[in-house]
Length: 636
Image (cartoon, rainbow, N blue to C red; front, side, top):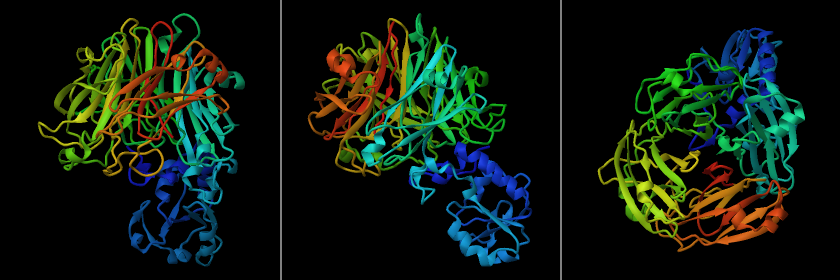
């Protein structure tokens, strides 16, 4: 039972109407709008742009008697809408209706045009009745401006000896935003609002930190484990709130057994997600299902299936509006073990979920990824080698092998992927290819986790990186959406971390479709601006920067790591030259000396900047007793 509403497509991007209908602060006025329509039956619905179906999907029209549906576009006349045959707007006057619902925002002009067509005595109501507060809007003249809905969700908890810390920066100021405000709504596990507040984003480039302990103290809350909704007014450049999210254990003892991190949640719900690992022996995998909408998720609307199988185990209980449910995947798929992987049938009810792996007294969090429904195998890819070189590639660290074990699990990430023709390329930090391992055409239901231990002898103590690439030597096709889970384990302590991401074309002046991607402007993306959050107190920061290249590009990068204090003031810079196809593993406490770090203070962060090439990065924290976290970085 998937929601019949468009949330996102890869041509037009996110659907702002969806965000406007699903916004938590639109829920109460939307319910009042439905009640007002039910109080003046029957209701004629005017649907000028197809918004009525989305509204009904979110809020239903319980108790509303529909007199008919009326459209402006002649091409829509005669279509079935909300169970009625759509009629031309010119027939509205003949409707026997006491109320008219105009399913549009910014509807004042249209309502004025409708006056001669209104049934006698009919009251007119529109979607403007459910507008969010004006203070939360960036563009008050155009309600469906995407920047009015610069939003996201985050898994947020302070319970059971665990706390979370969300970190980002006022990057909107880099796109000419003047005064941005962060509005936050904290939901408990049952979907009830525990706190709702706003705080300025500060000076241009200022750090933004939301710590669950501080929130709990400020509002006098008990323990909670739910989700945090974020909305930025005054945004520019990006209509998604990007962040890094860290999880910590309580102070003292084995607190770092819970040290872990992940990044932003991707703000648009999808029909399916993939890249959820099955539990290894001795582990539990917990999938956090967090309802992103003001309507409950029905029982049987979300399910799990082994990747490559249609054996779906459905969750047989509802999840309330904005509520959270932690699901042990073994409850639904008890016979599945790593390195099998799981497909999530999410029905567009949740933004990209997090999962948590618990075992050996430690835990870690990571995220699944959107599985694409719009992709088909690209028959041109096998023929593009001379132009694109390695083409689409997926880079990830091989951490120093004496201390860490590195493992790779390729993951199907599109409905039409029946097999994955891939190879793994091993590079040392200087950019030399040390090994090439063809994996063949992995079937959709494969269970091939590649341990990199046997290939790390040539890397030395500093490690290097792996690139997954397409390998068509045995046939097959690719679609450009190659993904994998990268798992790392500290040999001495057993602490683990994992990350997942998808392939791109890197560092070539040629453009294929929308690659090489760029965070700003159009392809080719040949520059870098990555956010590096830094550890406070006893925590150091780990960062591996990789210079991947589909074709040979500049011999070395001209990279700067720019250190900022919490107020956004630049403190210092460090220069790096990374060889093409090479990498650099850096630590905050080695990169900047104690005096400089002292000037930066608590809440400092860094930006990785390079105007000559696009780098890919991973960052994490280093704690005590071998604890660490790792996830890929984000840019803006």
